[in-house]
Amino acid sequence: MTKNSYIESYCTIKNGVVSLNGTSLFSEATPEFSAFIKQAAKQLDTNYPKFYKMDNLSKLAFLAADILLKNANLSSEKEHNIALLFSNRASSLDTDRKHQNTISDPDNYYPSPSLFVYTLPNISLGEISIKHKLLSENSFFIFERFNANHLHLNSRYLLNNNKAEKTLCGWVDLDENHYEAFLYLVGKNGTINHNTEEITRLYKSP
Amino acid sequence: MSKVYLSHHNIVSALGFTAQEVVDNIKNEISGLSLIDDPEVFNTPFYGSIIPTADLTNAFKPLEKAITYTKLEKMMLLSLHRTITASAISLNEKVGLIISSTKGNIDVLNQTTFPKERAYLGALGSVIKDYFGFKNDAIIISNACVSGLLATAIAKRYIKEGVYNHVFIVSGDTLNPFVLSGFNSFQAMSNKPCKPFDKERSGVNLGEAAASVLVTSTPDKLCPEAVALLGDGSRNDANHISGPSRTGEGLFRSITAAIKEANISPIDIDFISAHGTATLFNDEMEAIAFNRLGFNTTPTHSLKGYFGHTLGASGLIETLIGMHSLHQNTLFKSLGYSTHGVSKPLNIIEKTTPQKNTIFLKTASGFGGSNTAVLFKKVN
Image 1 (tube, rainbow over the protein chains, first blue to last red):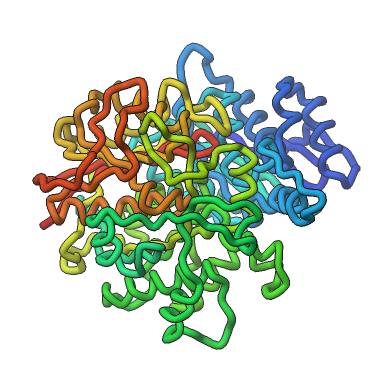
Image 2 (image 1 turned 90 degrees about the vertical axis):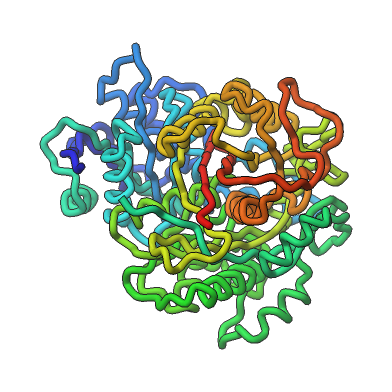
């Protein structure tokens, strides 16, 4: 049976702006991602020392997810089965290139486990799960471009079959100097219908 | 509601280029692992399973087209070609394509034959889609070492939701300096053939392989080894990004969810195809999770002693071997095991033995704290 589900909230991080439900929370004109995300995390009270050891993709995904999950006012008394359905285009290539640089020159060979572990896109999901104690389903998809159909279908299936009480879905892409995060939380409460038109509308909104 | 089946399939690995050949080798306890002492592959000799490039080139020759393919692409195209041919399904808009891979063509970062853009997983998806003329873009899953198994659960959704009538899954990863240097930096690699669940185990062997399968709800598209997908569960440990949970919580919950959906009792499970990477922490975690579920006497194997750990392909390959295990009513030996080496009792299969089998559990766990469990039941 199909149940009604709604987009409860959404968060965007792009072009130097962090916004929640369409309202800017932080903006900084610096074009450099590392400096920008560090500043944003500080300003938005992320307050999580592990954040600073994450790779850039994880930082981007983590900050957007952290904003949404804190804003959702979830009870800390009980566990929450919030499935994570993330996607992007560049997988973990930003960090893959860094690992490649550590092994390209035999005379300067220094691969490290702390960098290598981030050469998988789903590590970002692990980081979010650890911080928010989400023992839930995690899936990382790669698409050529943002694809509302696939996210919607997987989310609808998990919710309709009681495999998750909420889903946290979206797009977190980081490649060279380009970065873009758009995450949204789907559940039983809210005013924005959970369908591909609305997902696409929110994704495209400035 | 109609059932979802895994049907026609293929494996391209060091043990052969057809599932039958691979299964025959497993029955004869032949391993695909060998000492690889080749600076072209890695700067340090290591144990792993590698597909001889010459054999692959030969097998791929009839399938050549105008463009040049990477080794991984050849492996995946060869495997999927055989599965599509056996399935005799025309690739219309109701046929989906799912690809699972952890690193895809990552080795193109370190050479000049192929453009660097080939490192994008989406480029791999386009190569496969275009080669066969799929009408839909590939759905690519890159979720560490659970990818190949998770792909079966995700294929099921697309069929249950009525988006596709059939889904082809192709999984693959290769051995390359990128991955080998990383696992080596973790000091996770064994310099001997791996010994899952054994007291003397000293780490993982990596391997390369591709595998493919038809997922369908159409009963007249079933091969003799076909299985129904009864239930699945995926749960994160929420514990550590590179180490498994000490309590096996995520795996425990994944299996519990799969059993609930399958609506069976744990006692109905005839054998378990574990992840069994032969690292100290992984095998111990699995032993704890399995014991919490009362699986201490359920026959269990790890197939890593035959293939090594084939990353994004492992979950699918091991599922396909499980299908043959059911079909042949035979439990396959967990190669490399002789002395029990985890803190909880397990019934590790020490000898390939006939046994009537109906249902098996396949599990996988990976970096990022991911775990997946899927239950399969034989059809014929």
